[in-house]
Length: 163
Image: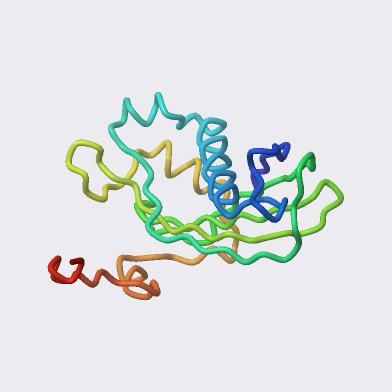
């Protein structure tokens, strides 16, 4: 199953080149995920009751066609990767015009965290069931090892270098 969320591109969503700003792509993806979670009865209120929250650990984009002011854009949501317990997930978002033109693709990898402990956790069965509805036969099984494959790793420096 694929979830779709529609946006009307506003003037404030544009950049200096008068097309959809990179930051707007990030916001549209986040809002699509929240709309998906609300539809599946795991919105902000329910997440608070469960004491969990979604955290995006890595996000990347590919752009194919510009999106302009006053256009309608439809953002899809599919789950193309998930751990067996759904504690780790990867969403793929595709941006389309109403006539079906594919303008961009985003991939967001994240985890569920316990809001008190601030550690990764297994979500409640309701979340697992909702996420399972949006998996496809191509959805891969993910594990903590997949985080080692992400392109960036922490690399601390001596703060004296900042002076």
